[in-house]
Image (cartoon, rainbow, N blue to C red; front, side, top):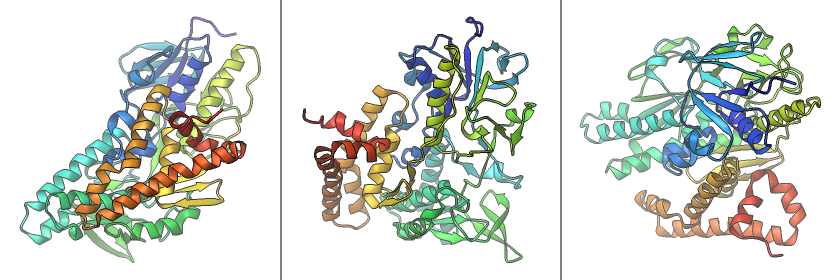
Length: 471
């Protein structure tokens, strides 16, 4: 038994860390729980595109930790971790304060890596947090305002060009979002939406290469071309430098420059550099853990999320994996306190979800059934909103979102601004109603099958809130 005076310390407030803390609190865990995170807000990364576009707002997907932890017995410490001393069982933060621990949970996540590309850190915009999503939105708005006031067509073209580096899931989801969103914003200002350009820059010829979503490549390629403005592809292009107004790249042994007023970097992440200082086994910077998510030589230390991997059973660094890891760590910590051994975690991969533009997505359920378009969008957002960390916050946000989906208030204006007919907004409303009605009929006819097949998406819980089943 560990010393009762020493807390369980969790480093990092991403999915894995935050859910470990919340599940421990719900279990009435006997140790004090301390969550240390340098930011004051939780970034719900899968929904940053909605934060950028305004489909969801900051209090929905970028809430403060203190709000999410209200009513729990988790102590939130906003500070940066300076050093970790495993042998002494202590953590030191930037303010100089020392935290001794009985158990430690490492969920420090990852950081944007620019692969030593000259100018990238200074001139490219990352897209990994709510803060960065808001900064990108302000930057893009500013470029559009500058463009509408510019008479020089060549300079206007530069201002209206956005280059996205990397064709992984983040790059594709962002490209699809901006190719719908920027023409709308520019049209609102009185500009010619056809002048807007979004370019996806990738080192290889393949999108989603080596990613868990690679089997959605064809669907994604079609979606990229079917936006309000088609996304341009610049493939087999090795980026060699990012400039204040463009991208220098090598293609077919020639150096070329893509002029762009905005460059967004989604090409890669690397584990937190603090982890490299630990004298424990790792693989490419990710800490090696056992099947129970414990460090090999330090059983009192758990690690999960982007910063850890089990070499015999590696998992993709996704939100659904981190969520399940957080819950499993909390359960294992409780077992250790009860004198029971930790048990291996079993990750249940239910499929993948991608945003493919405004009001469009794909839900790949169990890697067998692909639901595209507006139904895919509905399932994607319902699934992610059910993962929001606080039940009261979750219910409020989900209800607000569903109201917007069904009534299509803002989007009906958008369709008309782009020269489409009001009939389309009516069809969208009817489609949304059908999307809601269909699972209600299924739930009534086959409740057990409905729960088994869609329980992971959060849709059953959502419907129970809004339309309680008859008894």
